[in-house]
Image (cartoon, rainbow, N blue to C red):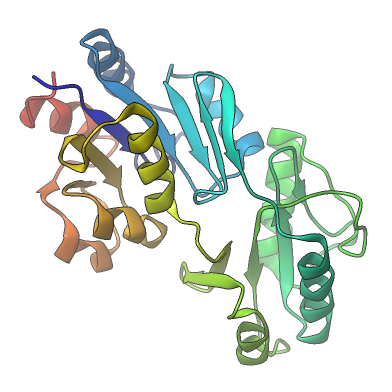
Length: 262
């Protein structure tokens, strides 16, 4: 069999929603796939700092982070994009003007407000990330750090329409059920895959993507072999070539075996 490149989302694909762990069956399947010469990559919307805990559970050939804004292969960064300084200034102004709540995400940190957030969902995220990841909380006005993408939440006080209009020329907006992931134009999980395939000179027909949510849509639209988890967003169904079981039902291992990869 020709060498395959396997690309995995994290939350809801590798990680269980119940205990936050990777099933032993998935760990063994990925280990066996690599032993047989295939390549294993994480392809996540998370920034690199939020991927690090996952890398303690499995071995990979590389990580694709921040929806294609940061790519590491064999421990070396081969691509990195940061929001340009002036665009970052304008973005901070728009966040305040349109009263949305935001977290800015970079390779080395996630940058939250120091003061409590108005919207409970964002405040819970800040508390969780700071406790579990030790990420950095800095005022949005602080311009000393670089960031690659960002997420926002909105409420009845926010002018969401005005904010989206203000950033639409520079960012792709992914609606994840009222939580919006905003990615610089020209970047996605699909562009990240293409960079990896070019690096290894692997044809698209030998790439397999595994996902469950709408920020996986670009790679599902792009790839020829698309594996959809048993629990998933319905919007991905038209693009799935194979539907597997849930994380907890050993869906990763089952799919890899059923597809003849191992």
